[in-house]
Length: 390
Image (tube, rainbow, N blue to C red):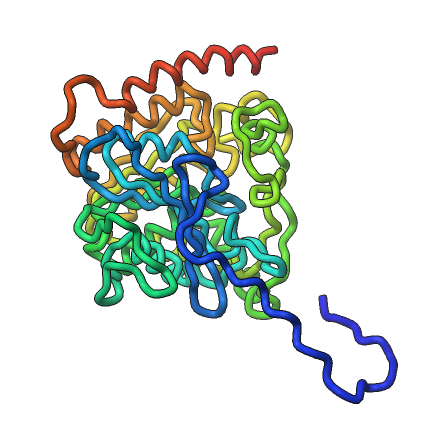
């Protein structure tokens, strides 16, 4: 909405400029997730910032990392999944997560949450993250960070890179991988938003209107469609399992702008034409969707955001080496599902990884820590199911 000026005499001198925002802390510092996590502010063009979160290695691990993992969240979201980070630490990875600009840790007063006009704008976020991880810049020479975005102590320029994206983050990373062939070794997608819920026909039908509105008023908002059921199912505030910042992940989600939907539709159209990715891709999806606005216990065992069958079909357009694994009773974020479902998802990644991820390096005999942890997940499953039925 345009600002209205009140009538009155023109001031004799122009008003003083607004004070600049406070400087962001430099260097790595403790993260809100607590011990073992640290964060780094990434400085981007146009005075934007992103935030890189690093799960520090366990001191008793005593082994060299076998790969780098970079996680990117979805719409109206940020990284808070400590268990997911621990899984990757246990299989020998360096784990990083990126809060994109205008999301989560990167939100600043005056920002429009989630605002973007083209998903390629996130290339700057990802490039800064890779440099801070000590990797070579995919757009040019480098590998030890930049003055504004210092690299990590044990740089991983030569480690294989695994990209892990959820929902819109999965779409974003798929498009990024297509623009940067040969950089990543594998792509893992957790319920990626590869196609509109109304399928390609629905997207094509409403795209002209979205395109027009995005050009006229990019920050114009669209009617809210999130009923809040998903938050009710996952948030500890409503009896769910997960504790997170409800300002960064609102109960009914951010208000979507026309520019954001336009950017997503353009990305989905590119996927529909075929991305021809040159790396192995794993897509994790629930076996069913529940897209009704009213509450049902099915919310806890279904994807309430995507039509999973439509996405499964569209995933075949990503490349020639695409594995689609359907996880029974999984939620939209598979790694927020009930404990036994999460255990199945982690096991699925590990099975797939035996063929496509770097092999385990020498380590002590015995089952890996992630496998030992499944017992704890399944033990908690009984308590979770009991709370649901009560």
